[in-house]
Image (cartoon, rainbow, N blue to C red; front, side, top):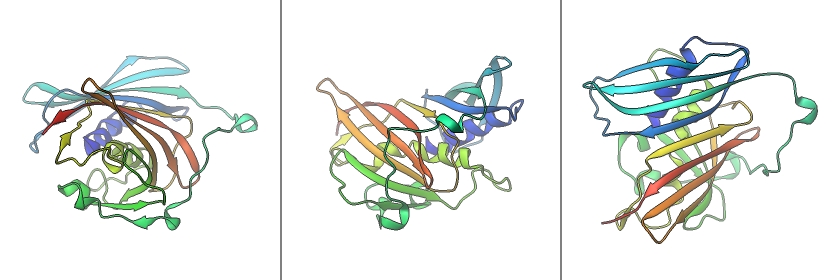
Length: 226
């Protein structure tokens, strides 16, 4: 889902772009299997406005929508005089240790990432930095926002509560809220994973770039014993 989230974000960003609005919330829904074949991605305006807009994008396979996203664009203004957050800044990637994510997860996407973990990692909780050197779309420079959106879905796999060979815990959605637009290529994930007793879980993360916190993400999980 992670690269798909990036593509859906790119479609939202490039649809009737506005320099005075910032994409500040995107909610993704995973509606079906996304095979590695030719797919269609398109976007439309749901709500047009002077200060707030809602844009929707979809990924379609053989006439069926397999993933969708809705993004709110909000008017930008200079609020630096009151800027701040109670979320603490975490140590940067230079203080973190390399972690081979492919030891836990298979696939080309995972192998394309660089992972670094900060001290204090435990089951269901941790602080991880990730980045990818690959462009989202070949031949088109990837913006910092698109890069962050491409990586955020990975939060569900960096601080697992249980080994993935014992339980599956796929997410059916991803919601990202940003109070500041990201910079740079690194995404810091400060994750907490909770499992309920009825087959449902939640992965929540504070999102960081190298300049500090930028927002939060959440993913609802369906828990399945293997």
